[in-house]
Length: 246
Image (cartoon, rainbow, N blue to C red):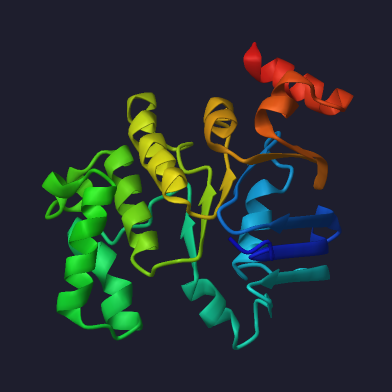
């Protein structure tokens, strides 16, 4: 395994108007790392992922993915996005297409791949996300957890080098959260490189290779998940973990 980072953020600043959302973020992710980003709501975690994917401009610093500078308005951003699989809070499936058709759409229509090859790959992905029996169902016929697993299969269809999860379980019924987390665990075991924004602290502790605690647009701590949970180094992290433990 190469030690060279797949993703590098250096002093990244993101502002919306006069409000600073990301305030000098520096972070690197190596291949096969599973970096879980935790912290209070509104502290810039989701915005960070959107900047990595070029969905948001940055006002300072630099982001590099596989040595390519990430610039939202540059021509190179399309190639970057093809190598990053993004799973959002909302599933964003096309309601008039079946689960299988949703997964096949981008590789066939956008990337021009052979339909038969894509379908074979898509069917294998439905096995991976434990959803083969629902392959011909429409989104309205699927639970939230099933729709999110279709969204994961769709992200995997492009053979991404990095998977990013933006609170993938936050919109789900508690009964379906476990099914999605089980698929994410499987992907971790496969050796996928993952950047995960989550409130599922137990998942982060069990699966993450690193935990990054953010507050007010800054990285406050970056450590082994179990070490951080057992012995947070800052008072702010201690307060946060104490509050979520009840």
